Length: 343
Image (cartoon, rainbow, N blue to C red; front, side, top):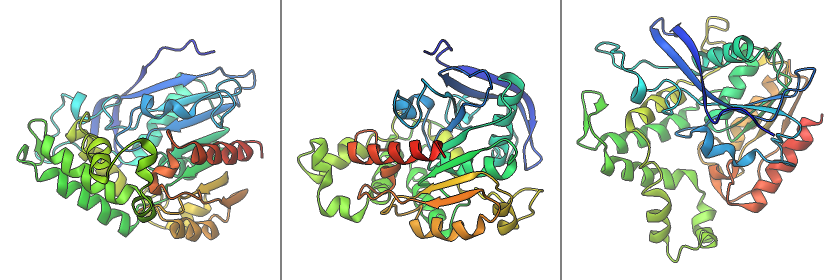
């Protein structure tokens, strides 16, 4: 079904970022599944989430599912900072005293648009699908390139990073950078202790109160809460480059579809620019991409052809939107998005 290489790079050249900084020889990693149809209108763009590479989230791409390679041409794009696309870990260029620059969602989406149009010859997207930071990219796509986007499915994501979400990210950054390997704004060696502390902080935010109260971690075979924390969260980020994680935290915190010359910070105007069909799927118990924020976004989507709010009825917190090992949440997600894709 798929004769594309496992991993390809789009050479974007020297890219002037939203900040005005020039990022030399920028590269975007991507992976495709399935084939383009004759009309070239069966494309689903699938951006990655925080810390993830395309292979971490391709479990959702399967025959019969929402992202079906038998019917759609699915393009996974690796968000800058994930170690495959341009990132601190693979960029030799010295950016000066300020260090590695902020690569905003606007920067990322503009390079993704170049990949699609310049390299793949794609002018129209049936859907942009994303979870968490992937969902934030979907929102940016719909606002920046409304003429290209038929639908967006935003799963446990938002159009901008809320103040509460920012506080969560500050706690993650603080835990990570307490490691002595963090010096002068960057990590000089692998911060094992910092990554473990980050995982412990993340555990309290990513899963819900009910998840811990009802000991839902037992379903994965853990005999105790400590065993779950040690087995799932102490090593959750251990294989990632810490400087890459810092770069993506900065992207996340700066996320706001209105922070561009086109909208000059006018959030309602940026939301009204979206003409796609919109599906918002917050996790009912998600602590930092909260259901109420999605509900407040719906009335602002005045230009959208349709806008639906369908919360994921799960006690798995933020992870309800990425239920690789949770059959009930996975079935709900696949059924809801599949139905949306037919409308």
